[in-house]
Image (cartoon, rainbow, N blue to C red):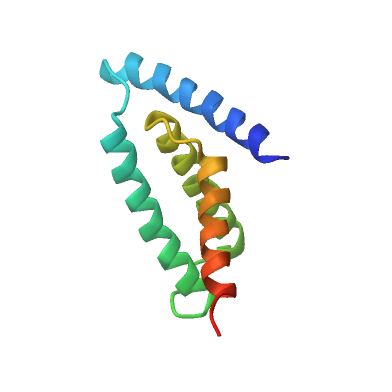
Length: 106
């Protein structure tokens, strides 16, 4: 699946969440709430990485790690869309900057 397809799928799922939130809570989550959700997911990711390294006892860690990484990617895509950030272009530009800095070092 290419990045454009991943982005499209993420936004379809976000639209389903929007509908669910409006029905159940009278409004969709704000960008700030999505960002807080991302922070929580990153905390969960840290625990799963520790579990994979043998520091925490978590069953089925590999599957849970894949799920959490996908959740985080979904959140990043959704937040980027809400903030009008072209994530693919921003990613490419950032990687170009990092590569240039690393290859310019002696």
